[in-house]
Amino acid sequence: MKLVSIIVFTALVLAGCGSGPAAKLYLLEPVVDGQQTRTPTKAQDIGIAVVKVPGYADSKPIATRIGGTRVIVHDNHQWAEDPDAAITRVLANRMRAYTGGNVIIEPWPRGFEPQARVEFDFDKLLRDERGGAEVAGQLRVISGDGREVIAVRSFQVLHEAGGNEVEDFFRALSLAINDIARLATFTLQSSEAPNT
Image (cartoon, rainbow, N blue to C red; front, side, top):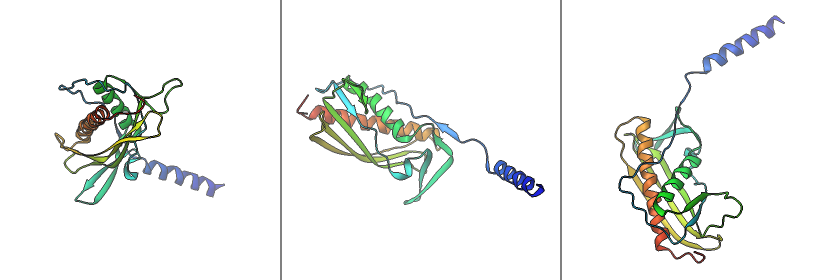
């Protein structure tokens, strides 16, 4: 009995030592674009898929590139929500603002039949050493029925940060996502989706 008590006490002490201060959580918010111009697209009902992010970025700890190819993960600085969900939410927000249309994230509700769909794959999603955001990947515009790829565009965006704090990274990332939403809107405008 005494041995069991010692083991339980040791386990509790070790558990207490392992827990440090709570991680700081950061929320990605849409940027307010002072030069925003709404240019309606032919497709006014647009569906977007949840974005795909690289493996090192699909968990909540924030990844920072250090010196070329090395990446470190910050367990004490984390996303407030899953990165793919946060980026999808902000992309949908900005695309609504730019297209003036209904931009719905999959799975969409019954009765909603998009005229076009947009998918985003991120190959790179990093905080750089100076706090800026590096993002790269590809977007695809697909017909509303999902049968035809209408256009494919690559993107590579680097936004410098105003400082080296994690908050600065989130502001820079928001600006980068704004640029990607503009590219998606331009691609939709210049594409003739068959069922728009």
